Length: 358
Ligand code: NAD
Ligand code: MN
Image 1 (cartoon, rainbow, N blue to C red):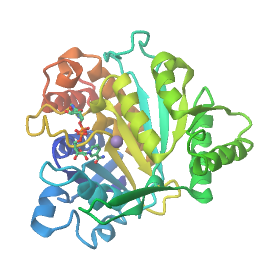
Image 2 (cartoon, rainbow, N blue to C red):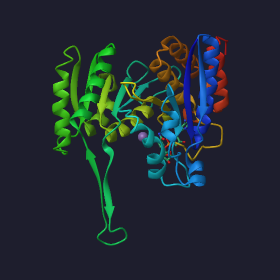
Image 3 (cartoon, rainbow, N blue to C red):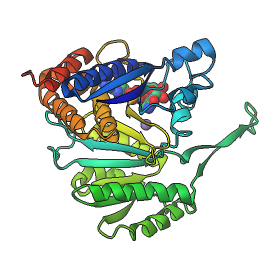
Image 4 (cartoon, protein in one colour):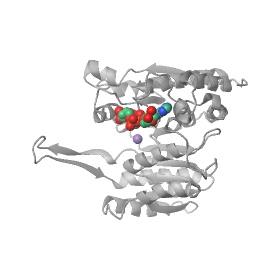
């Protein structure tokens, strides 16, 4: 029996709804497999915790999850608290010190889901975006002075290091190599950003020489948005900076059918620290508490977690269950044009795990 210790951090808004659904599905999966089990510790960190304690997580929070095998995360974002406080106080407070530098975001049109792109049925859109997750535009370097005066000034400095760029490029080339098409697009903006992005491009070419079997091309980020919409079938694996990939991956999620479906893994590939798995969406204030959040993004993130834990067969079983359920329009939540509730989708996936006919 393989036992995995999971730290569950639902956070706020629909984060709590989808993580509790995700844990139900994982426990059902463990029961079905028989060969693995999850020991889940729950952490009530987030906006409500902040209101009581003045911080998003305890000061020793990271040491409490440091030795878990993986983290399942919901969302940081609370209607009463500024977004930069919730994001930096929780999600980035875990990602950065745990050096989860590779943020992997698959986008694929699942069975039963309709892409808003006319030409896309299924195979035409099958991408993985690798987002640099430790530096770049979200490094946290910058400052703000003379607040409230006409001289007020603020900077956010995009910081790129050779070590940081090399490791994410190598990760992306390796991932591209592991996929059938062996095709990587390096997204850049080296026409306008003439220092860091030029270094980014140079390092991409250097690392490319280690991966002669991978075809690669380079694309300016603005042109990339157009290519994603107009020629989606020409894209396979993509690597981009923290900011660029943040934006491109929400676009990818929408083109694949809904933000509610898209998963992500924040990986520390060297496994010095635990990695973190979460849907890419946020707290969704507009639908929180209504029981209609699409839990598929969290379930797919759980598949990525299983793959990371070395439980490929269990991950495949869960992915098949997810695809059987998305194929059935009765289980589409409102973001997909249906009227199913989070609980209906969760029950259907659990049935599919057990092989029941739904
Ligand atoms: P959002 O992702 O929360 O919502 C965007 C839109 O997509 C909304 O209309 C929402 O209803 C819909 N949506 C998102 N997930 C859905 C799901 N699972 N099912 C159905 N519909 C879904 O983005 P936002 O509105 O820009 O941000 C809200 C809050 O969440 C903010 O505080 C923001 O900072 C935070 N946020 C956190 C994370 C994170 O922790 N990873 C990511 C994004 C946003
Ligand atoms: Mn985002």
